[in-house]
Length: 383
Length: 93
Image (cartoon, rainbow over all chains, first blue to last red; front, side):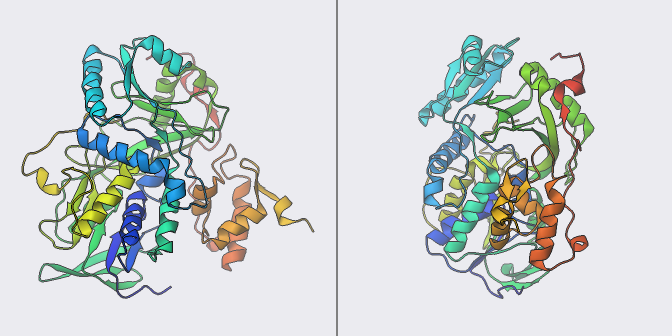
């Protein structure tokens, strides 16, 4: 395989973000787009995520990105003319509050969500039990439920964006590692890979868990870090859980996919920053305790697979989507903090606007300069 | 000779040799990629049954020796285990 020696833009990272950006850019007529992927599509965080799509966020921006993305997910099979269904399932997310303080926060979040017409609502423990009959409602103060939240298949959604991009002329190189971004007089002149050099003056950093390493290649010390989050899946069984069940304070998310297997995870404690993607027995034990207490019938479910992926965490748990102020032609879609998959359609559209120097489709502030300007409203509703 | 659409490669997903060969044609030519688009190896057997069969097809298709193919990730717990077996009797918050 020989690489093209020239590109209009090089996107580093073959996950949901890179392929979404490529698609919306190519659809607008942008030529010679190349995606470089170190391993294969969805190798990184996209293919390791919990596959949830939710709109119940605490900041207006996260709500907006998730809500606009959901509208796109709802029609994505048609838009991308997919070979394989993206397996969108909208049976809701049930978020559980275990203290008055947490419940008050949920009330605030709901009012933010309602400004964007997200159909979330407060529910009592009794109503929560109606929505999820297998739920243990002990200690539950209240919950919120949004019926249009749910699940989509991250592998197949990425493949769908990738294949639609290729139909618009995008070139994707798998098994191709970026080793250097070449600069001349502070401007990008090309990307060096282990398979050859590609001349370009525009690079998009969509490298997920490795985004800070790509930043270093143009001399930027990006305010993000990566952290392992573990996850597991069970054998498929008949449907016993419609919505995703999630709690920030009890620290768990758990859903049953349309295929029938359960996927669940929780946030680690004292996890060092880094690139470790190994599984641990501690996680299996912690997860087993959490899920059997919360959803008792899961005691009989068999775990068949554990894995881990990297959250790429930003200071306010909201993504950084912008062109660098310091390096012209260096674009970033990074720092997704564990929710990159569910907002990727909107991020692809915003990055397309930024690269084409158009007005942003939505009124959001996602540039990296917000940290220096102190315009930070941190997201609190993350697992 | 049996028709390739009648040969089941993955029993967990009921996936046939014909479907597998179609994926190879579409450029999915590693165990990891085939797993991600078709769930082969994600079921109760975790690739213990289908894995070697898939690798044999990949080797044939890509004209490589089976031992030269990338080894697929092997993920714990290496055999189905019930949550109840892990926690024993102490179910508590």
